[in-house]
Amino acid sequence: MSSEKNEFGPIVSSGHLASGGLPSLSEIEFGMIMLNHAFSRWMVRCMSAAGVPDLSPIDILVLHNINSRNKAKTLADIALVLNIEDTHVVTYALKKLERLKLIKSGRRGKEKLVMVTEAGAGACRRYAAVREELLVKSVLATEVSGETLSAMAARLRALSGHYDQAARAAASL
Image 1 (tube, rainbow, N blue to C red):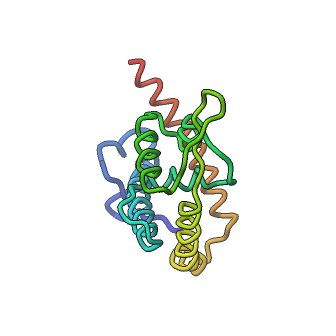
Image 2 (cartoon, helix red, strand yellow):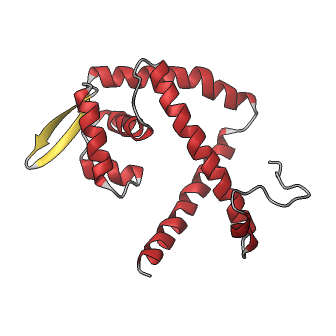
Image 3 (cartoon, helix red, strand yellow):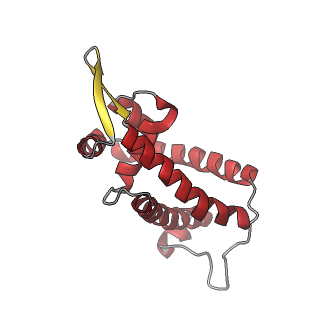
């Protein structure tokens, strides 16, 4: 990978944060900011191209999670997997997806479960087809290996643990 450093220093969004003990962390943060916004735009436009406009990035993530492995999920399952602290965000997405008939709800004892409908599964299949055509082919053309991407993903997941721990510590101040 090439470095984006130049004669002016690292590429960051907040120079004052890059002046501390780990300037490269600010580079990662700026990269994550850019990636997060680009990924959010991509999800919304991809789902729209798949025939389901007007979903937010969270709605799309929740729909894909519910569709995953074709098994019913609880609100807690979804929030845990997507690392969403505020369950109201997931609850709102569930209501919207159910209103659009992309998911349906049921019960297991007192526990509410949600599962994907055929319309929701179809939307996910169309999204996957658009993703394959427009995104996967583009990434493959850059000669980035699957192993490299998997290693990057593992490092990002590990880094997310540091941010979660720091957030817990900051909340106690």
